Amino acid sequence: MGIGLRLQKAAMIGLVIIGSSAMLAPASGKGEVEAAELPKQQAEEKFHGSYEKGELVIQFDHVLTEAERQALYTKYGLTEEDALQNGLFANVSLKSKQELSNVAAALRKEAAVKQAEPNYQLERQFKPSDPYYKSQWFHSKINAPKAWDRTRGNSQITVAVIDGGIDSRHSEFKNRLVYPYNAITSSTVLPVDHHGTHVAGIIGAAMNSSGVTGVAPGVKLMPINVFEGEYADSYTIAEAILYAVDQGADVLNLSLGSYSYTGILEYAANYAVNKGAIVIAAAGNEDTSLPFYPAALSNVIGVSATSAADKITRFSNFGRYINVSAPGQDILSTIAGNSYGYMDGTSMAAPVVSGTAALILSKNPFLSPQQVMQILYKSSVDLGAKSWDSFYGNGRIDAYKALALTPEPVGAISLNTKEFKVASGKNLRASLAVSGSMRGSIYIENAAGKNVRTLMSGAAPQKGGFVAYWNGKLADGSTAPAGRYSIVFRVADQRQSLSKKAVMNVSYK
Image (cartoon, rainbow, N blue to C red; front, top):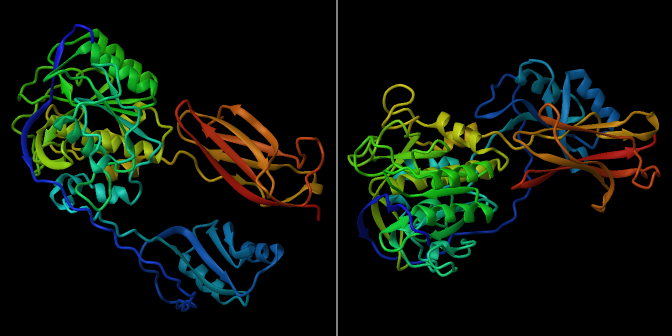
């Protein structure tokens, strides 16, 4: 450990231990449900509930030929988006601004159509069964339960907890910790620390029907100890930041700080952001507007603390460096000894934001740090003076709104035809819209899942997407036999990758 500035943990630890919880077995059940014939909707009846705008689901009386389906679609101005059970069901969209109920009523009069109805939206009715969840008021305040219906965090996303160690044997962290590091001893053995354990639990305590739940219970945690006693120095913290980034951390939480600026911390923070990681830090707990570092660094998200009443807490720092605010008073989370307790402080507010950032990246891992920052800021609830202010920054974090503003990493694959007739002399055209900076490879798979032709490799998107053409030839120059094929788009950046495919039929008639 180098000699440098001493930094303190940013929490006001008013610790109240409430003990360990008993494990509760989640209720589950399995059963088979027979398909029931749905009642036809009356033509004059208005649709109720939420449904996908401009979409219908058609159940045909029998499997139609491609020509029969297309004739029906042409008659009513429809486009088939997808089909199930060999075409017995079809998801279609309206090409024009026709009244959905009128089109559905007309379709139901067709002899070949058994049912036509909206593509209704269904909601998951989910609430954690962890026994102390009801005492974690901050989850409902930031709309975490609604956010969890979209994602509870992806295990491919890692949050580094640069703090004072962790109770690695805590039941909430089982199989959740990756690349632990003790920057004081240069080992993987971590001290058992209340503060670090509490911070880690706020971010990612498991949703396991026991104890508490973190904001992003599905992500991985990378615990790194930088403290020797109550203090850590800037060099050791910078070392920890570099280590976390080099080991693949996507979000870095620093619930610590000092009123002294240091170049090495700014270098480390910039290094992290330039490598694609998001850095989040506590604003400090002395009710002052003095800049608190690393929260006050330009590339770091500085977080102030709010109460259950959505008011700035009596202890939270404020000032020009506050970017967002988050709950930080009476926060229940994990503590050492496989137990649970309450703590106050901006140290507790920062991990709420870190967990939310991890949820954003779980939905779209290709976003840049700047894009994640803007999503956090724009989705926050404005509590103080209109727009930004020195107490709440851009507002109090709202996880659900943040995910609503997060774009999908890729759109649906668009094909010019799903029935590719090679003899026509026309090429198959496939396109994929993407968000974020990535490169892509595009190839053709046969029905056995084998790559039979690479169309593009390591290419950058053009105007927000990828486009590829296939003439029906295989890699060896021969013509593809008739049958079922898939076109696969595999996109990746320096940190993440994903694949998407679309199925088509190849024929010669």
